[in-house]
Image 1 (cartoon, rainbow, N blue to C red):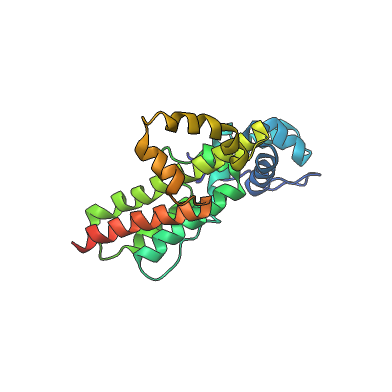
Image 2 (image 1 turned 135 degrees about the vertical axis):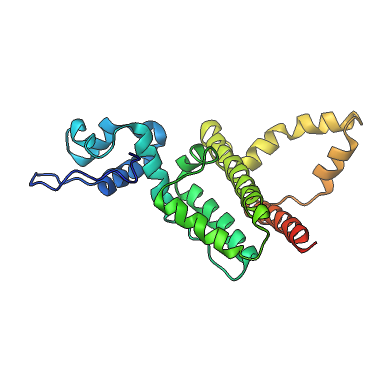
Amino acid sequence: MLVWERPEPPDRPVPAPLSRERIVGAAIRLADADGLAAVSLRKVAAALDVGPMRLYGYIATKEELLDLMVDAVYAEIRPAGDGWREVLRSLAETTRQAVHQHEWLADLIGGRPQLGPHALARGEAVVAAMAGVDVDTVMPVVDAVNAYVIGAVRREITEQRAERATGMDQRQWQAAFGPYLERAFATGRFPALSAVIHDGAHLDADQTFRMGLDFLLDGIHAHISS
């Protein structure tokens, strides 16, 4: 029986009462503070001041715990709006916000679909907004938006981690490698790339994300309307 459907142990009088909600909340706090490496059943039990064996009545494996953590964060992703375009934009933006709030989420999304109750509610809101769109088009559209968001936020999180690891933010990194690029461009071998770097707009992460999302939504609109 999947963890979503498996009953919790009955309540009993103990010094530290437990529930899946409390266990998942403690695990999320550990991950938010120190990443997924900080999450284990032993560490979660210590944070709750209980013995590790007590957790096994609620969660059988660490994989189940991670699934529950992801689904708990999906409760924060509530796509809303009038019409499919607004809802898809809301899906993208609220997913991005959730990943930046819980950086570890970037490492757990993008594989097989999440099937917890909050993930299903998120999916229901998105698909319901696409009523009237050809049924064979709905999931490829949603998958395209999810793929864009996952790729974008993973790139952003990777940049944040690189800043912490190197002690250089993006501008400092660019300044450090600027002389090398100037020498490379001076060879004349990369004229198109040189023109874009020198003359193109340099957008921040928010602008880049929203512009790319607009491109994607425009393409979806053109396809649906054709």
